Length: 236
Length: 236
DNA sequence: CGTCATTTTGAGGTATTTCAACGAAGGTGG
DNA sequence: CCACCTTCGTTGAAATACCTCAAAATGACG
Image (cartoon, each protein chain N blue to C red):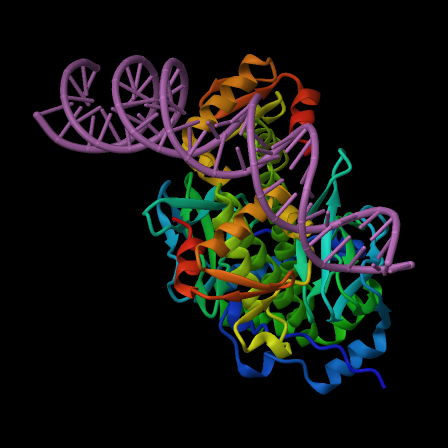
């Protein structure tokens, strides 16, 4: 049996005050979503949808990590966002996806035809409200990223990224040990932060040499000095 | 008599395909909003709400231009976004506004208590849908800004800004003449683009010397070579 | 276990940021 | 209505930071 899709608790409270009843999907809503959706289990590094193609579906990431990126005319790619379980994908404009979405790890995705979703919005006001919350959450995330990008210094951007990943931390075995999981490649992180891979590498080693973090392996970083990290992350 | 608030046509169509009927507010919905809202007419450079205060209302900008910014610990300010008629303000997290909102020009704002708004969401599905569209629009805008910020070169950022302002152009007398209105100060633009005012000034004069734009006065720029401007604005 | 892509390290170029000073604009009060 | 003052905007020269180019080392994958 396949688990029902869930929408992480992003209470409207986060946005605007609300009552508890709206904070989580109830069973009926989960069933509604599950019945509308087609489930896709995708291997790592595979494309879910491509920029510019007809936006026929909205997606709910149930499991795994994904990324959204845009192709630049030089052929380079710019990573716009990383996505974690319960995040919504499928941002479009004039019926076309604005990004390309691909998996970073193995992922489980619920694909929901937009017409079907809109139809159920009409019947279930709270369901639509949840999507409003999700999009608002994405907007806050994007604004946070904007704050990070406004800074010119690489170590500061990297510090904000690590803190952001710590917040978004998918709960894993090693999470409690103060370890932060960075499932994506260095190249992807650099692209996301608007840095070259070389600058990112240098920034990481500066943080390491400064006794702020330690890499146990390429995808796990331990925060040794949280206050120093936060001081770097806090925009001056 | 006071005009009813309007929500600019940001069809969900822009996001996901939809039928025409959802593209605009109907008279009933406009009346609903107008009856819920308290109208505020504010002079230029006055604060609507402050970062960190209780987020009791959502705002609809009916007229004028506003900006949202955050205070940094150094005392500097970072402009997060500029807002134009029909834009929604009031982004919050855990019941507190995340930005400070202030007028750039004289502005007319509709203030809607969140509880009242949520109440009417329950009765009017389409109204909620419009807000979903608005927030999605803000998200796209934010991602576009993110693309601009990823670039390191000032002229490129400035070119993207001018094109963005041309799109957002409030329809004015001089709009048709190829003039773009930049109502905000140089300092605000620089802060928004993550540049120093000096760099912004140099970037503007480079664009001017390159025959790409001409400033008729400090707040009006004429695009002389649209293709060159676009070439600069298109991320490489 | 070998091949290939990714990541790291090094040296030089170029852009923006600083720091400082001048000129212009807008708002206030006489 | 004009003068003053304050704020904003522009211009110039030096410093810092990142980017580019090149090459070695590490790790991933078949």
